[in-house]
Image (tube, rainbow, N blue to C red; front, side, top):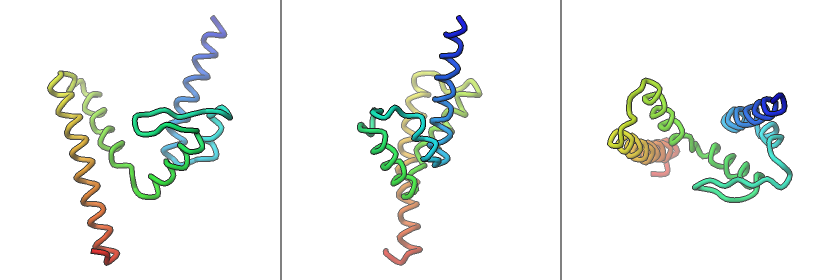
Length: 118
């Protein structure tokens, strides 16, 4: 039983630090969470943890944080006890996707206009 609790706490610590250190861009600390041969498999990426860190850094450098922000709004709605019905979930998913695309376009237009590219 004690080992089970210790294992659960260790896993929880890794998961919590994974989110914190990645979103805080603490790549030095984030690397400590991976096994030397660790791989990342997600819907948008498959590869070594070093490659995952590299594409994550590139994304942050380009301002790719919008989708996670909008996903956070969805979770905030869920925290109020709303949005769990099938149609509501579908609407929230679509709104997040459409919002991500719209905000990305506006952001790129703003950047292009302020840099004199457009």
